Length: 274
Image (tube, rainbow, N blue to C red):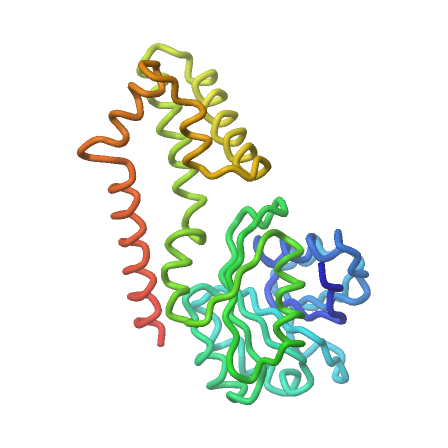
């Protein structure tokens, strides 16, 4: 893994911002190299040893971070960005994890000559198993891309896309994807209950099964299809279940419809906010 750039500025210490900070610190970043702007007092307490302030005006005037990462909610971004115009001029690369906000929103404030990277992480970053997809504007060189990648790789896997428009599909697949998996756990547990299992046991079975299957998929290196076939004995119980899931109203068709709906909504939200 590439060495983490430092110092770093984190704007927004919510769930994803704090997850990223934990990942950076676990990879060797010194708390003294981390500057955090977070107005919520309770959230500020989570960044022990870091330079934590409530407002950008409280940052050292000479601060020149290698990376400034914006992790604020989309609805407040336009109000937040102008306060960072000066520090942006001294920043190596501006990195956004703000959902639905295109690079153009940052270029409108900081200029198109500033290196800006937009990323779409997902919530498993909280346990170091995230998936992040990144897109860079033309002002980014190899060094800026490397710095952005190093930060996001600290909490999971990373991939780059050459078309910012693809981030709508990325959002629908991996950004929203964890919720689909959590709902599968709920559905499995409810099915177990309907067959007479106690609710607590049904949920325990569903949770452990999905978590374990995911870990097996992650570690084995085999394709999902190969692992599915290995579990499916001819004429057995799994084959009977899969005949339903892969039938006329298949799970694949339902998932495809759901992901398409999420992608459409991502486009609608982006259009409404710009």
